[in-house]
Amino acid sequence: MDLSTKIAGIELKNPFMNGSGVLSSPKYLKEIEEFGFAAGVTKSATKEPQTGNAPPTIIDISPGITLNRVGLSNPGVDSLVKELSGYTYKIPIIGSAAGYLIEEYVYVAKVLESSLAVKLIEINPACPNINGDIACFDKEFLEKLLDKLDNELSKPYSVKLAPFTNFRELREIIRIIEKSKAQALVLTNTLPVRMDHQGIMYNWGQSGKSLLGLSLRNVYEASQCTDLDIIGCGGVGGPKDAIEYIRNGAKAIQMATILNQGLGEKIVKILENGILNYMIKNDYKSLEDFRESK
Image 1: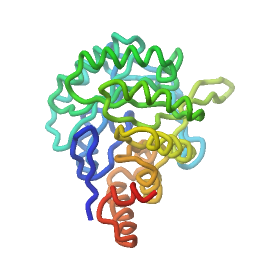
Image 2 (image 1 turned 135 degrees about the vertical axis):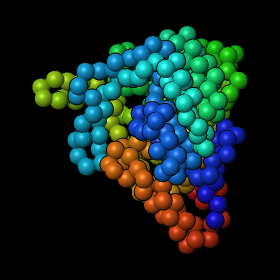
Image 3 (image 1 turned 90 degrees about the vertical axis):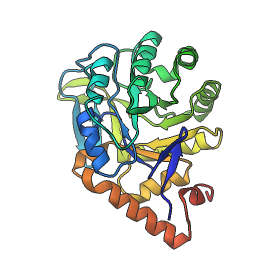
C-alpha cells in the first residue's frame, strides 16, 4: 500500500503536514519530523517582527473547536530563516509568507526562498484576524501579488485561501491563481467569525471540527474546476476525516487544532493505520485510487 503523494513536484512519504501556526517554529518543526509528518509548515512570517494581538489569543469553545486571534505574531522573516539554518531537516519545509502590502509578501517570499530547508512557499493572504480586509477575497490585489511573485520566485509556491461559501467566487479566484505560476492551493484557513469574550467583541478565526464540512466543500469545489494540487486543511480529527479529504480531491492534508490536543506524536500513525485499513478493505493500492473513485 502506497501512502506517498506529491505536491508541486515535491515527493512526500505520506500526505500529512502541520498547519501554519501549530508546532511551526524551527525548533518544533524537528518534532513534526520526528512525529512522522511528511513535511513541516512554518509559522506565517512577515517582513518585520509582529507582536500580534493582546490576550486572549486562543480559547477552546468546546472539545475540538478553537478560536484564535494570534494576529500573525512572529519574529520577522529574517530571524525565522536564520533560525531555520540552525537545524537540518530530513523532510521538506514549507515557508508561510504573510504581509499587508504586495511588496511585503514578495520580500518575505524571497527571504524564505533563500533557505535551503524551504522547498515550497505558502502564500497566506487569508489571515482572518488582522486589521483590514482578508486579502484573498480581493481579486485585484491577488492578481497583482501573484504577478509580482511570478517574476521574483524560482521555487514553487502555493496559495492559501480563507473558506468560501459562495463557490462561484471561489472558482473566480482559482481562475486568477491558474493564470500564475502557483502550483498548489491550501483550503482552507480558519473561518472568520466575530464573537464575544468576557464582554469584548473580537474578530476570531474558528478552527477544529466545526470547520470540517466547509473546508471539505471548498476542496471538492476546487477539485472540480482545477488541476492545481490541493492541500486540505480544517477539522481533521481522525482517519475518517483524512479519507474524506482525499476522496474529495486533496493530495495532502494539514492539521492544527488536533496537534494542540496532545496527539502530536501519535496522530500520524493513527491516520496512517486508518487509511491503510480502508485501502485494504477496498482493494486500493494508492491514494490516487480512491481520490479518482469519488
